[in-house]
Length: 244
Image (cartoon, rainbow, N blue to C red):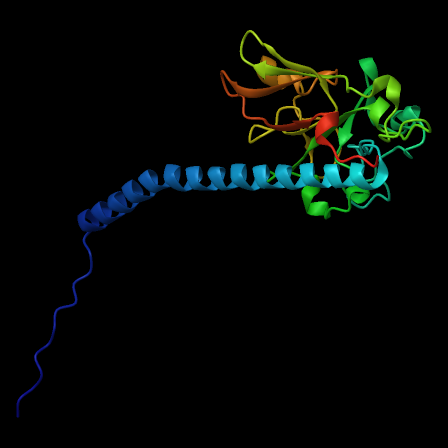
C-alpha cells in the first residue's frame, strides 16, 4: 500500500519575518505622505466649493432682502437656539452689536456664518477641517434704509473692509469690501472650533493669519509667505444682488 508523501510546512524564520516587516514599513512610510497630500487636497477643494456656495447664498440673500445678514455668535454650541442665527434684524445697524458678535472699528462686525438666515445647512457653518468659517460684514450694509432704493444705507453703501495681500509687506487690494468669509485652513490659527467657544491661537500664526484673527477691519488674502493657509472670499456692493 502506498502512503501519501508528507509535505513540508515550514514557517518563516525570524530573519525572513524581519525582512517582510521591513518591506511593509517602507511601503507604509512612502505611501503615508501621498495619502496625506490627497486628503489635504480634498479638504482644500471641498472648502473652496463651500465658500463658492456661501458667496452665492449671500448674493441671493441680498437680492431677496436688500441688505447683508449680521454674523452669528461664534461662541455658542450647535445645540443652542442661536446657533447659526445672525444677531441683527435688518432694520438697525446697531443690531449686529448684540450678543457675543464682535463689533470693531469702522462698524465692522465679526462672528460666524449665519447659515440659518442664509437658508444653508448646518454643515456649511464649518470648513472641511471642521472649524467654523469667520464672517465679517460692514454694519452699514446690514439694514435697509427707507430712502435707499438699492436697499442699503446710503451713508455707508461702499463697504468699509480693507483687504490686503498676505505678503510680508502687504499691499492693499481694496478698502471697500462689503463682507469677507474666511476658512483658517489646516493649522486653524484664529478659527473657532465646530463646537463653539474661543478662537484657536488667535495670535500664533504668521502676520497675515494674525490679521485674519485680530478682529479689526483689515483682512489678508492671496498667496503669501511662511505657512499662511487661509482660504478667503470677499465681495463688494456692486457684485451683490439688489432689490432696486
